[in-house]
Length: 131
Ligand code: FES
Image (cartoon, rainbow, N blue to C red):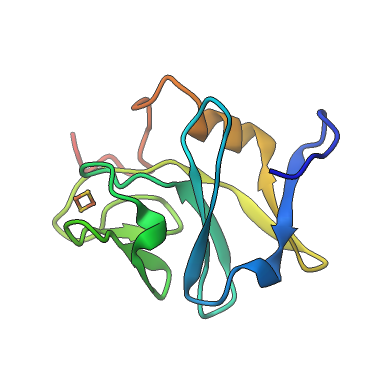
């Protein structure tokens, strides 16, 4: 992770060119869960904890379709917007608000810490299909 001011609201995690469209890169978080940063073929960037809500599969290794990713282990499809499992599947992966400015990717510091650091499993899906 690139260093910014410890008080910066957004964390610069590098240039947009580091991730090809349709691909993902991972970002380690000291003491927390790895983050997957996705670049869609439409040019959008999303960040999620790199753990499928099913059994923890590495979402960064999945196939990106539009604005969702298929988990490489059992093929759950996860929304890159909400982190929710789509279709009949249930579960939710934490997302981190992302923005692009002047060719650089920024993650919202507060969301990054909330999503990647313990206690794990305290994730509220935007719509709670599991209840
Ligand atoms: S671990 Fe992702 S679908 Fe099973």
